[in-house]
Image (cartoon, rainbow, N blue to C red; front, side, top):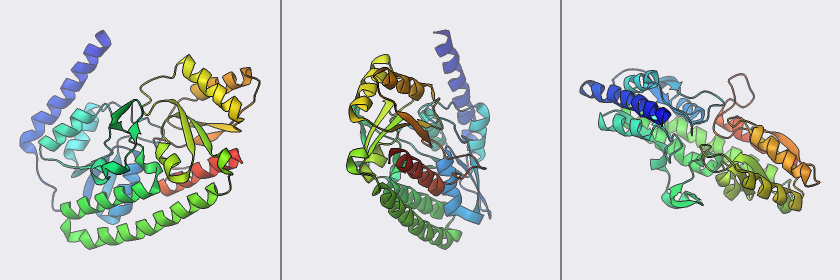
Length: 310
C-alpha cells in the first residue's frame, strides 16, 4: 500500500511538471534539425531512418529495456517537453506512461503515436481481453511499413520544407522492408510446417506468427507486468514434450529465469529441449551488436529461430 502511495506521488510530480510547462508550449521550431524523443529503440531507429540529417533523435529506453515496465523519470519528462516531436508506440506498450502522453498532447506538444497509423482490422486482440490490442506490431514487417508511413507523414507536417526528403527516405526504406519481408519468408520456408512452433518468454510474437505461419506461445502474457504461474509452466512443458519441440527461446528484455524453469519442467517430463538462443523482443540489440537496427534485429531473430528449430 505504501509503495502504491509513493508511486502515485511520483506520477503526480511528473504530471505537475508537464502541466506547469503548458504556458510555455510552442509549435515545432523553425530550424534545420528537429529534436525528436522516441520511447523505444525500434522507434528511435525508425525516426532516424526517415529523418536522417534533418533530425537529432534521442531514445528514452536503451537496448534490453522492457517498455511494459518502464517508468518515466522527471528528467524524461523534461526531455519530452523540450523536444520538437515525441514518438511513441501506443497500444499500451508504454503502459506506465499513458497519462504523460495525454498531458503532452493537451499542452500542444507535437506527438506521433504509431498506433494511429495502423488500421484496427490489422491489429490482434489480447486473448484475455478483446478490447485490448497486442502492441508488438513491429514483428510484422508489413505493419512496420505503416509505422514508417505515419512517421514520414508527421515529419512532413511538422517540417514541410523538407517534405521531399522525408518522402524519398520513406520510399527507399519501404524497398528495404520489402527485401526484409522476402528474406523472412525465404528463411521460414526452410522449416517444415509442423516445426514452425515458437516458444518464448512472453507473448510478443503473435504478429510474427500470423505473418509468417508460426504457432506462437509465450509463458507470460502480452505484458511482462504479469508473471507466469506454476500452472502456466506445467501446461507449456507438457505441450513441448508432446510436440517434441527442439528449442525454446529467451528474450533480451526479459530475465531468462522463466524459460530456464520451463526447460527444467520439460526435462522432468522426460524430454530435453534446448534453449535455442536469444531473441530481441521489446528492443533492438546494443550499438556494438549485429542487431543494432530494426532490419538487422528482425534478421537476427529469424536466423536464430530457424537455425534452432531445423
